[in-house]
Image (cartoon, rainbow, N blue to C red; front, side, top):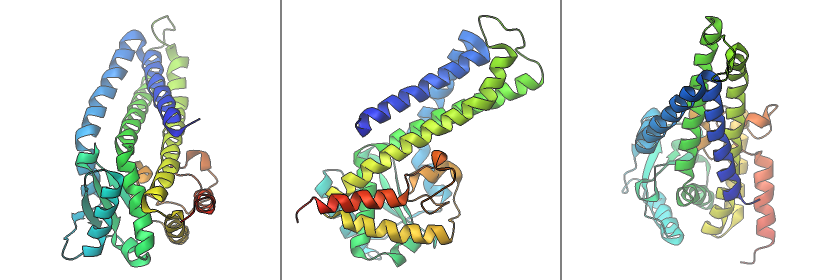
Length: 286
């Protein structure tokens, strides 16, 4: 199944889960409330998510005279990918990482940490930026924001359901709601299910950005080498980051590849991503 089809199905599943949670919480009126939550939160994510995350990491717009090589790489890749040249930001953080944000290619921004610029060579930086620009071109920044806000709405309703169950609200088990058992199911199972689906969407888009980015920069080994270095750093030292934004970074800021809770990881295993890129390089002639 293609990544685009898989992502569409997963977003549909996440939306359906939100409506089910709303129904269990309050019947038909609960579904309306849940749908309203989704609309309001998605509107906010669409217009403000980029500004929020850039401010969260104290990102500052890069001065072209101070970072001429970085701007040269971004311009070259943007022109090759047929997208507008995004704004470029520097995140003052020693942990090497990068992310893209923005509701559309016309409003996009890419951000790299000072640690990434110190650790990687030009070719590896090009591989990383090609990956991030692929997220922009594929509109993954908007998809991830939508997924995160729907999941957030589900978790908000689950929290409300937990308190409702504690105080005995909704105890009558009728056709309109799920009663106490329904509230308990919402409170316990819904957040787990929402997190699993959200993470599945994130992992699917990472694979696609790896492949698209490798094609964009012209050599899959650029990105493979960068991921190996980034993963090595992440395994030794965690980055200080907000968990709600972990899915945005090119590598998970909280772990380096293998995880005992891989089902809940925002990223595919680094070893698998590197292996895919190396296989891709083996079947391409330069």
